[in-house]
Length: 144
Image (cartoon, rainbow, N blue to C red; front, side, top):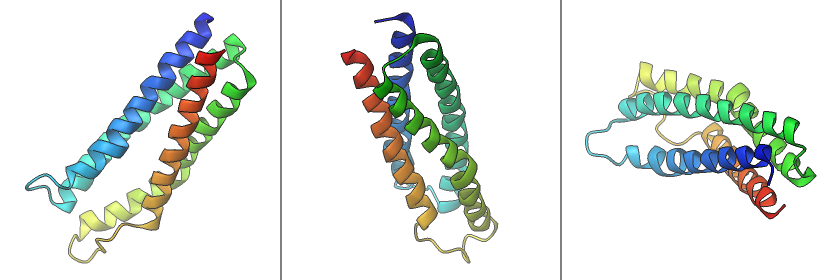
């Protein structure tokens, strides 16, 4: 395994672990904690996901740099591209829509609808796409 591939594998699986831990463990559980209201949960979520997305962006840059410098297998490059595009859609399209909704809930928690929005489901769907793509890229690199 080349140094570039090793860096890419480490970054890919770090990213996988972060998405699993934050999106699929922390995010749903925080609303079940005693005393956590919807506004408090949304405030925590904004901070946590801002940090996650910042780290994801740094990992994506590292992985793309490794791909450009290390001539990774085409299957790995395709899966990396899918993960990066999913992240870009989340950051550029979905997060701003979610921010508007959470702004409304935070401004007037009683008036805002408490059911999950379809935009939130889109974000979760993109998390699943990203997760599968990241795992696929890592597996392709480990098998190469």
